[in-house]
Image (cartoon, rainbow, N blue to C red; front, side, top):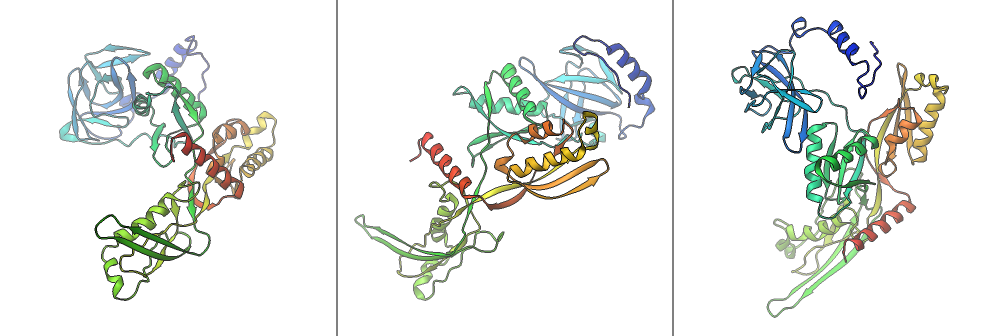
Length: 429
């Protein structure tokens, strides 16, 4: 593995690096092309410039393109015209008449071209394998510092994703937050700096809320009445219900036990009878509609009057949202820092335990040790930074949703209090 020392900022070592690249790396004619065709180009990066728009950087593998040529985007089946064909040197671009195999070029203002798209000729359309970008490891919420910048925030985040495919964002209507996913807290800080410099959006990171779920723990019964008289035909309903938790994972289920001739008006469709029960369950009970219900046996109604509308709420309880976290600790290499690998492994496992984690076991893969654990999502905020510190930058981790489990009483009380406070701040009654 060749190693070169230098400074990009001071340009020290640059000439030596470039000379060795020419000497050691194969020329485009010395290695087989990734595919056969008269023209193959691959877009590997997008740069967004305020006064220019999106600039696409690409490499030519086979063939030649000239300024003003029309090429075929095989990914989206559209034609693109390459006007002002250029080569990039730092922040500057210089127009060139043509580019050949091995060249890296740039072109601005392409309509339907994105990272990992392939240029080719229409008559010989093909697509190169995409670049395998690393999976996002960390999640955070992002909020604007100034009111009125919400739309600019969404547009700026979209541009940043175009530039950096390892960064993703989404708006969670359930949590009421814009969530960003990336490689860690430092990654987010750099992106927020670019968001301010390039798009004029002042934003900051915030702790993401957790998408808890509520569920039923025991059996119960309830009664609901509906009575309305407004001058015409009156409305009256009296509903008795029984509800119980089904087996885990069986979902939301409705069982109708109404019998006799009076039950017939309620049967076809059943939309009205389900709307009250389902609506109450979807809203949840924790702090007056905190989180959606999960795994309720949709109540068993008993018929009393002809104009009944079967409705029901519930008394669900909170469940903890957990995730599966395998964390790879590069213990063997830590000896260079004077630390015992077993000590680092113990520190990682101790940290997971302090986050209410359940250690499932460890596996050895060569020089690496993989820890498999189940940890509540609420305890994983800024975990990437902590793991980096414990393992001196050698540890990585991967997240997967594992399921739901009951949260401790103190966590339930804290979530209910925060949810109630957030509702008041938003003007909810």
